[in-house]
Length: 102
Image (tube, rainbow, N blue to C red; front, top):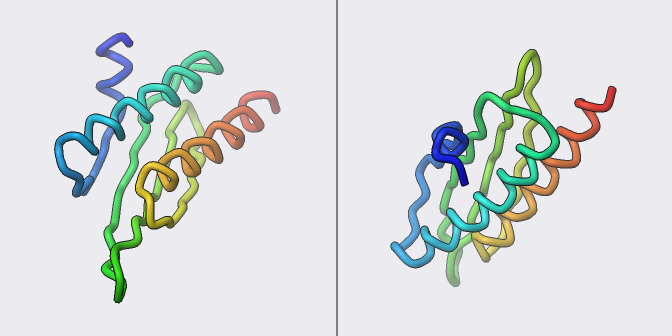
């Protein structure tokens, strides 16, 4: 993928080990390619919060997609960070498509 597009992606507070971070980046890149096919965007920002539970962790992902004159956002929480990331990005893509087609 074009590095200028990846420069528009900001991952904040992603507290994952290197292998998990690579997997998260691949997942984000896949969704960014879909977003780019719909229309150009200014920035995609994803923020992770890790919540400690009595057994294990819960990962909260908040995402915002900025594009000319608009912003769409979503959030998700799951024990699997990749499920949460995927869910947020799918919701953002759906909302983005809806706003672009108006």
